Amino acid sequence: MAIPWLSALKVIPWGDVMSHAPSVLEKARDLMARKGTDAAPPPMATANVHDDVPSLGELKNRLLTANAQIDALQQRQTQLAQTVRDLAEQNAALVSAVSGLRQTFRWMVGGLVLAFVGLGVVVYKLLF
Image (cartoon, rainbow, N blue to C red):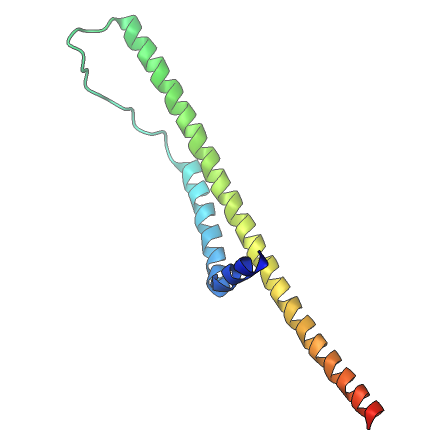
């Protein structure tokens, strides 16, 4: 089971992921900043598709319903933008952690190579 995961991880261009992470984070921050400064959207005007003229109460109810839907959509859009920003920040942290782990792994492999060389020298001196 571990082999497909390892091969999948080797295929991922980690250098590209790490180089693009700051720009993704910056774009997410720009999206949040732009969303916060946007004015209210223009009112939606649609043609009346009914042949008969609706009453004033019915129009008022439609308007209240439409306003509630617009408010819900704006709230959802704000939540989604916040989620994108959070994911971008998590991605940047993950990339930073992976970079640190790669560097630690390199040091460990170097230490292991030195340990094996030292062990080989000790074994050589004991045998000869």
